[in-house]
Structures are given as structure tokens and as C-alpha cells.
Length: 454
Image (tube, rainbow, N blue to C red; front, top):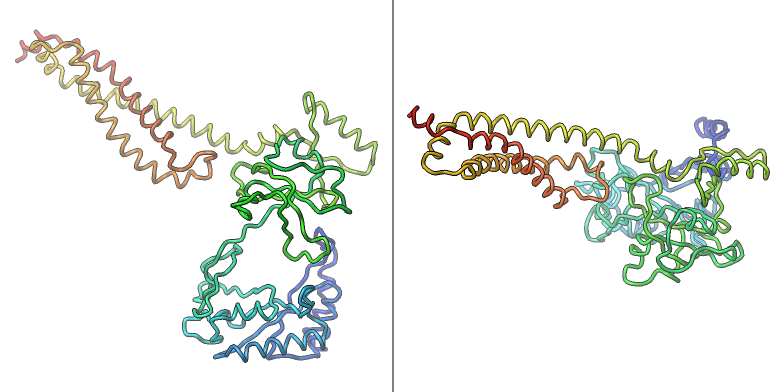
């Protein structure tokens, strides 16, 4: 056995000791084996290692100036060797044909290099799908002309068999958040049913698999029809009871925090979809804090070894999730009030100085017949003009700055018209109030002093 392969076989299981996922599986390494470097003495030990649950054998390929016919032959031949000679590839439960994952040599999947090197096939992804490939893991490191424009997300590629690198664009995949709950959970957290029914005790491991979905899920998959009675299945589920029937639709819910992404939600009955970690939700008639001690006693009576931790009320959980946001909003409110007061003081000072400089003018106007109301309106109009200029400049800056405050907003858009109008009215009103005292002083200008000075 080659030295490096021998080290994998002997050392990798030891590295995995003490590490298991929620399903009890050890970390699995993906061995992409190059078809042009086929060595039985390398493969046999790795296949034995994978058979113990430590990995998978997949196909790796380098090719240049290839043709569709040669590509089909190369992949099919290597799949046959891996499956029949080594038992390294699983069979598709529907077609019975070997299935495999793929990674392209030189990162040039789907003829994605600008110079056309190391591939030559525009329809490579289509061919891989037809040949039994269930996943492609070709993702070059940037910067590279083969790098896709969309990274760190899943999408269904839009393949054009006549164009290179057509997998660069596609339709984003919506991944559902699956929650395993028992009958009565939705009522306990106060979530109403929009349509359909809730789970019952009759929904068990021997009955029809059922699920309740949220409105976002229903709208995404069945936008023009009712979701009740529709069926879906989880990707990769090959069991005999893979199809799940929708029996209810509930509103969209944010389970963790207000700014969490709006994921589509699926609720499955716990008797049909058990989980390793479970949470208990209790609805009380009185104060929920008083039920915590009783809840601990009941659990202890059932099994003293079961720990009860992270017990809190729903209101406290909401408060905790909003603590940072509320602190930020409190500080912003305090600073806004301070800014409004400073603006009022500033406007008062500017208008006062302007009135002092025009006191003779106001006296002459009074001597010529201007009433106090006329003088007062003149001063306030001047303040309003200044305020409107400032508000206009401020709104322009606010429209630009809202991009940095998006994370603090909930239930309101960046360009909420009511908010902008309300702020403009508040600032203009502040300017009018701040200019009222200087305006009153202007109405008291003595006409005789003004005429004597002239």
C-alpha cells in the first residue's frame, strides 16, 4: 500500500475519534479520484476506509479540447470501473445506475476559461446530469476568470448548451427551515392556522406523513393554487415514505430575532420526524414565571437524570433578542432629541441676530403702517425659508445614509414616506417655534427711535 494512502487509512479514523454529528456519523472526507490516474492499489484501501463511514469516492477529471462523445465515454467507463471493480459508487434507487459527485480539473467546468483551454464543452453540466452526477463541487478560488459571480449560496444554474460558462447565472434556491413539533405547539406559541388543520395524535409513524408550512413556503412553491393537499419531499430522501402532504398553512414567523432572514418554514410532526435536541413549550393561564418551578418538579419526577436548562418566558426571550436594538434606538432617540434642541437654539440665535440687525427696518415699517402681525410674519417667513433649505439638504443626506441603518429598521423600509414627511414637518415646526420669540421682539421696535436715527 502506498505510504500516503496507508497514512490516510491508519490516521484518519483516529482523527475522527470523539467527533460525531447529530446523526452519530463521523466526519466524512471526499476523495476525488482522477480518472486518468487510476491506480487499483490506491483505490482499494480508500474504498475500505469509506465503507467504514469515513468518506466517499468521487470523480475527478482533467481534459483538454474534448468532444461530447469522448466525454461521455470517459465518464461512463470510469463509473463502471469504480462501481463494478471497487464497489465505490452507489446506485440511483430509481434508475439503478451508478451516481457520483464531480470536480473538474483546472477549474474549467463548462468551458469557463476565456481561452477555451482544459475543457472545450459548453454543455458539460448537462452531460454530467445525464450521466448520473448528483453534485458538482467545482468552485475555483478568486481571482479567476472561471469563478462564478454568485458564491456562498445555492442556485439552479441556467445552462445554455451553446454558450461557455452558462452556469454563472441561475435561480436562487430557497432552503426551508424544518422544525419538528408535537400537536398543540402552534397553539402554545399563539400562532393561528390560516388554512387546513393542526397536527393530531393520529399523526404518527404509521400514518400518512404530514406537514404544516408557512405562507412563504406555500407562495414560493404553489403561487397560484392552494397548498393544502400538495405533496413534497426532502432532497436526498429515498425512503419508502419520502412524500409529505401539506395539511395546514400558518403565518410567517420570526423564531429567533426580528432581523433574521425570512426563511421558508416547514413544521413536521415529532412522531414522524424525531430530533436529537428537544425544547418544551408550555402555555400557562396565570403568570408564566410561577410555572417554572413546577415544570422542573414534573420533569424530575419523570426522570431525575434529564437536565432542565435555559428556562425562560417567551416575553423575556423577546426582550433579550431586542436588548441590543432597544439600547441602540434609545441612544439614537436621545441624540435625536439633543440634536433637535441644538437646532432650535441655533435657529433662535440666528433669527435673534437677524432681528437685532434689522430693528431700525422694523421700526420704519411700523411707522409706515405695518402691524405687529405683518412684522411677525416677515420674521417667521424668513425662518421658514432657512428651515426648508436645511431640511432639504438634510433629507438628501438622510436618503444616502439610510443604507447604513437598514439593520436597525423593522417593519419600515429605507425610504418610508411617512417617516421622511414627519421629520420634515417636525423640523419646520421647531424652526417656527424657535423664531417666535425673536419675531415678537421685532414687533416691539419703536418707530420714533428708528425715525430719529434716520
